[in-house]
Amino acid sequence: MVGESKEILDDVFQKILTGKKIIVDPTVLNNDYIPNKLPYREKQIVSVGQSIALVLKGNKCSNLLLYGKTGTGKTVVARYVTEKLLERASNIKLIISYSNTRISNTGYRILLDLANSVDLKIPFTGLSIGEVLKRLSIHISQKKYFIILILDEIDYLVKTHGDDLLYDLTRINENLQPGFLSVIGISNDLNFKEFLNPRVLSSLSEEEIVFPPYTAIEIKSILQQRASIAFEKESISQGAINLCSALAGSEHGDARRAVDLLRIAAELAEREGANKLEENHIRLAVQRIEQDRINDALTSLPVQAKSVLFSILESNSNCTTGEVYDNYKIICKKIGIEILTQRRISSILSELDLLGIITASIVSHGRYGRTKKITNTVTPQIIKEVLKEDQVLSIIL
Ligand code: ADP
Ligand code: MG
Image: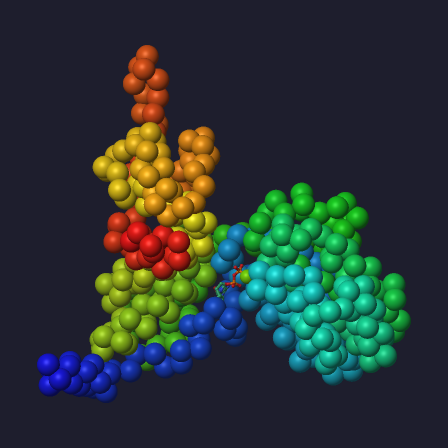
């Protein structure tokens, strides 16, 4: 047995050693890599550039809002243009501060990011937002800093915490003299403006720039360009690039999905010691991403929803809501959680449907009324693996 394991492992090592190196520079495949060329975004680059260029003359620039669906190049354009501005701004003390509000997901954390970028020490907790803002404005004025604050995925902040912080940030200039702070807000959600108070909206959206989805052809050329820097010559087949672009372009032109697919496929290909990244690696990458997505969705479900899901596994395929509910009650008793009404279970089933974990289709029985037929769309084995990890459910699994 020992011998066999060693041989298997030797084989793994050998494959890596003798396998061709296909990735030249793995960082190129990361989503935060900034390419030198950003085709199809000339208009947006010029607009952002014109708007923030006033800084070079020592003037405050407008606040900006960049809009567009995921993967339309908003983040990369904002970072590219501000980086170039920084290179030109030798005459002023320009600071580019970046915060993603999905990651720095409270007002306090966002201000911490800002404080970090201007080398101001703020304790991790304990101060009021007002106090942090006060210290920031004193510091910025003293240093005569010109600040461009990029707030990425700003829709997330607004939907979870409202727009108080944005209000404060757009007002901060009243206390800054000299120095200023301008905001570039980036949103994936086109409707997020509805969540803003009119005063915040008018000040934040002094200028707006829209990022339309890429076409399939554009995605393909973006990928081709990225692949030519990331991979050794002839290490990726044209078929793989075509498939990858077709997959990423099919719903809405999402360059992020395209780059993610390329990165994961490349890792899979290198790990198996392949000489070339081929279409089958892209297909495997699709599965891997889907699996990760499902795992994430399942893991974060509340225990009631997990119990409903387990009830579905315990029922026949194509079961009715009634059957699921009967099994659900038994499971609740076994694990000792509250039994919710059938109506609540029905709405949990709709949520699971929305997440793509099950499909609930309505079947009509003529004058006997209508029922929902439930089928799970995810392999039961995958669901069970995740449910086993749950503290409460693990008792019966
Ligand atoms: P968004 O912020 O709109 O979701 P990103 O700016 O993160 O999209 O872009 C997603 C990925 O696609 C990144 O890896 C980025 O480098 C790449 N990308 C987007 N637009 C272009 C472009 N015009 N040229 C080259 N790469 C691009
Ligand atoms: Mg982005």
